[in-house]
Length: 408
Image: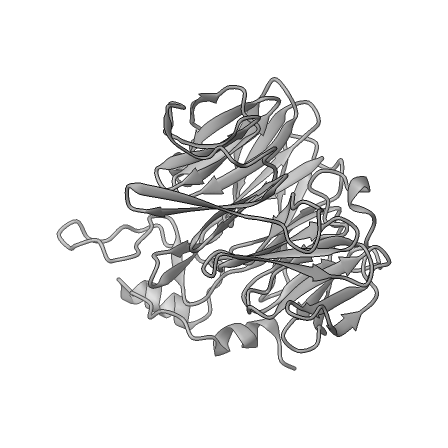
């Protein structure tokens, strides 16, 4: 059987930098749960990629973080071994967000718990590193209003609650510390952007520093910003009048508004796979938007039925859509032609989704997509480049009302 673990082993990946015979032996033996806690000798240089308290692995340690709505136990499902471990929660789970390593669980009263899942990928641009450590809760933050969005990237995490955005030190999270850096008032959301932030509010999108001082007003033409995606060649933000693409070349920041063509429906929520240049968003009831940050293009893709979710496999050729009837489809960007369809998934209209719900969500990495099946406690692993073939059916220990992929 061609398993996920076998698929991982077949991928090309950067050479491991092994700094000790003990670590090498553990990795060769397949010790997926081992964490390296012994630092290098003080008289030796710290090896490239070394992270204290974590084991560097030869491949991405991807998994599913999920929880039943209203529960207080987060499950972490290892996609290679199909084993689970759990982390007790202090908050009642009603919404969930992720940034690859950290999972942020919130309730309806403004409490936000931060979980270090212990699996992550570090992107160095021309190569990547993969790590594994023990998962743990880092504690709870309390806000004056319910949390609306959490965006973690690089050294910063932003939390949107009410009309304020709280700025967290993400580097401190990596060291196990919850540290608030400040508040950006009268803001809808803020996307970490290099050492700056893309701040969205009623006046459009501005580039600000961490104190909220305006650096550039390049996005003032964006009307009613909502929805974002961080792509390799730039950041995109949905607007009433198009999709704003913001790029940085060192000090200079440029912004291009990609107008809607083919539909008047706006983009509000983007889905992309990590370290790619393409993202997709639902376009009303008639189709999907596909944005390419490298090519600076926005394409309308007509769909045969209203979609509860869409996602981009980043192949410049297709978009994935999940219809209200529970059918997953692969559709060509240029023609709108359906190339594959597979029924049997949980789905419901987007306006009925609880915040952070996985019912009607497509999560994908560079080779697989994960969609909650119609059967309770079941997730389908989809090979989206092979006519939506179901590679595996994953049986979970509890209902995955809120589910996200981690470690990507």
